[in-house]
Image (cartoon, rainbow, N blue to C red; front, side):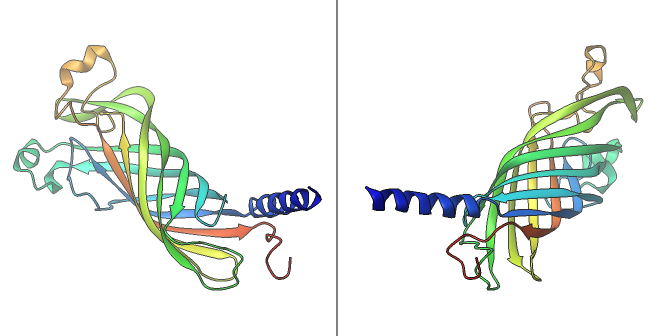
Length: 229
């Protein structure tokens, strides 16, 4: 019984010390919009995206992750490959502030205390919400409704991260956001009195993409099984 208690305490000690491994850093890249206005290319950044990111490395294979990213979504019909959109000639821009929470899963063990250069592909998913302005098109011109909304969605990202210099982790990531909104581009006005201005495919919601790099600093105590602890 005594040996069992010692074993349990040892496991808890390892778990608790590893759970203190944190990453804090920045995201820098670009965004592009996929909806009823503009081009429909999946990965075609046309605006700057930047923000902050935090990770709590729960184990060598997964992390809890939070981020705040600012960008401006922009769509221009004349840059589309769709002749109907080119003839229509709409364009819009909408500044967003996205908050995202979720899980990051690595394909390989990502032990920040190994003392070696390490790297692994990873997947990220969770929930997101983006604060944006509401618009509609009046006489073919983007017109503000003077209100704001939150567009909730599901983030899906694929990336690769690796130890870089000392406690710095460098990552490259491409992420899609499926939203439960169809009005980031003004194609489905929120105000009921303006719903006659709806256009596009009302059965498809809006998407937007973030492509870029992450640079994070790691800090926290080494787990007790590591040299130097």
